Image 1 (cartoon, helix red, strand yellow):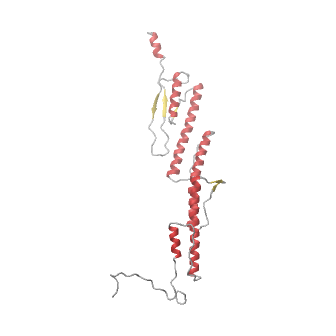
Image 2 (tube, rainbow, N blue to C red):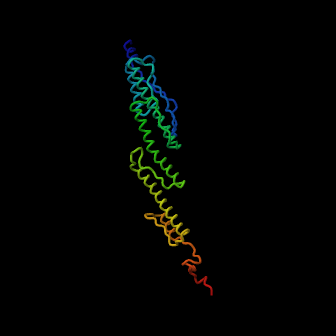
Image 3 (tube, rainbow, N blue to C red):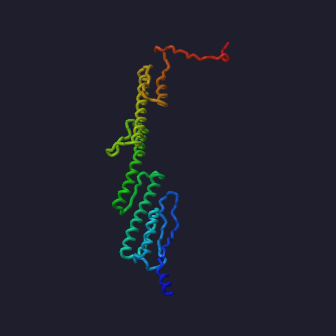
Length: 261
């Protein structure tokens, strides 16, 4: 009987997990739910036994699955206590970074606050490099928007000499960034050329009396081409003393139904 009781007392006790209510799923920066890893019996932490290893394995598995709220007991002592402190610090840093990423994603991507950046106080080494890399990515993605806004605002105010920069901090644009910048600059160039031609034709016809003035804009298509053709067909009504006087009456075709007998 004593032998049976000894075996029963040495049976390892399994840890249990008690989660609190979870975080929201609407994309907002909500801290994840707290998860506590507890033992079924008190006084077992810090003894280096199988229960401690089981709790560490359980916490590592939860962390591996993306649970940044799991923690090891803080009352452990000795080497087990140092392991628990180090693990809890790592998970806490991961949690802060995750919350910051959710916050910045919501602020920049949804609310249009383009100046928001990640801030992880106390982050060093790879953690700091990760936050810096994310902030640099946001800077690179936000730059075209701010540059297009600056350029279009200048054009709206009548400044057709402005254009998008093809370099960022001495580094030339590449890929879609370069393509977008060239498209905007080409649009501004065509608008500038068309404006200059309309101004020239208007001056020649209206001020200098040169009725044969025509707009010449090369390489245009679509609406630009239609506007150019409209300017080319622009004429001023003839007046006495000009070579076009008397003006010719336009020939209007008449159908049989409207012919006057």
